[in-house]
Length: 499
Image (cartoon, rainbow, N blue to C red):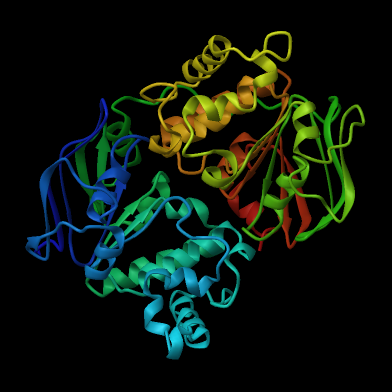
């Protein structure tokens, strides 16, 4: 076998009392896409972030091209050959796309009197975006005008522009639609063909088996096993990931017609930035799925239903006729909203687990509806931590330190704690492992049986088909098809109405 480009030996990392990595050995070889998979908190992102200079190991040794490797930062690592595309947002608002791409290198564009040559900077940013196939994004565009997927493509272009010898991709596909994923897959395969190494972190087992040449499983901070392509077996990989057999149904197993049930939420003739005369009805005791490609308008629809975006025309009302005009009105009507961009829209990462869960539920634990006590607040938060099995060192732990799956549980806890009767879930299982996904699906099914109304917006067709009583497909801001649940419904039946 060829010499590894990157070698990591006996890597240890601890966060307070939590052991994140316990003597992990990992190597990245030329011409190989190596997958990293495991449950949330298994150590995948920690090991890759150490390799990319985001943080330091407590113990262990790293070699890059046979020489000691100890990058001082992600910028230092990228300049010297290891680039990482992070799971959550790595761009900055308020500036242009080109300024994001060249943020640490602006001096190269300075001319006389320190003036920035923006024309040249935009030209080079355009070239970087063209190189990955993101030609609809231009360097002169303001970053704030881009959606979540487009911002992620900017991050990819920024890293790929430096042509690192090792490319680390951390849960990036969860932010991308079908088109965006193809762009990233093409980049990864091109790198492999050029003799570079790719470390690809994903919770999507089907994706990782399709894309990767080898697969390393981590569990509880330890390396469990590495599978070569010929050894890929879904059941064996799952068993290695969780150390046990998954029991019970993964998706829902019972579906009943709900079209005659009480109306929970109704949107009529909604027109907004990327919505064109959309009307939907959500009934109590029903799970409705909305699917489509990234720019179909479904994510905007979720925001409109929660009152976070005001439509140009049309109305959103509850079953009793109450109009939803803003987020406060939605919360008064017991509506909860889980945003796709979890870290910027649903959480305050610098705040504690307690603060994030408690902020939406003050009316639930306040004495006589107005007096807030620390005792009641702690009991309220502890109940959500326990019921959702949130893995944290305690309610005071900063939310930023949690794994993706546990961050998502905190978001769920915020809305479940206040007894939300209508749940609007935009990509609710983005960036969570197979075990947590199963738990979330079972939680949604239990809520449906309790008579709650649930809307799932997702780019994952198996999730939508497996969980929805009705599945609505959108394209170009309009509804193109509605499917009732059927055992025979397949991805192929649905996708034609999306593209």
